[in-house]
Image (cartoon, rainbow, N blue to C red; front, side, top):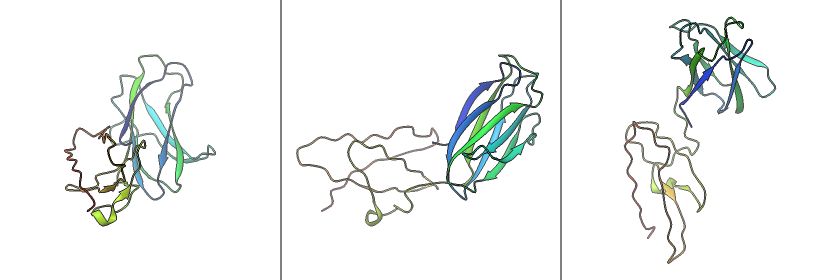
Length: 171
């Protein structure tokens, strides 16, 4: 889930870090390096599943960090490669953070904003929803068996979110 922020380091000469994520076609993503320790200068590139380079950036608005916005032309796995500008500059102290986040909200369930449009879920499965705007409501439909206990959990919730869960009978 997004945003993704990971800690990395260029430990050896010619080191590069690769991270993959599932991109949605037509969605814009911000890909950036942040919190660079002294001596670190990053170059970021995006690659498709075949390894073909789709985009690259050496400098963002806060050099030597890289940052750019990229709109996916493919749906599926894409790879982000981060390498040092100078491949000989390396040490375990050459640390940085990589952050990837969509610039637009992506809710794979589409419009489930009313009971009539509720997204079906089943026991034992985890379902991911997105709150694309303040006041967003996501309805789900679940068919249970009488005299059976179920646990509904909200997990991996962003710290900026306030969530409320309510259960309703269908009748």
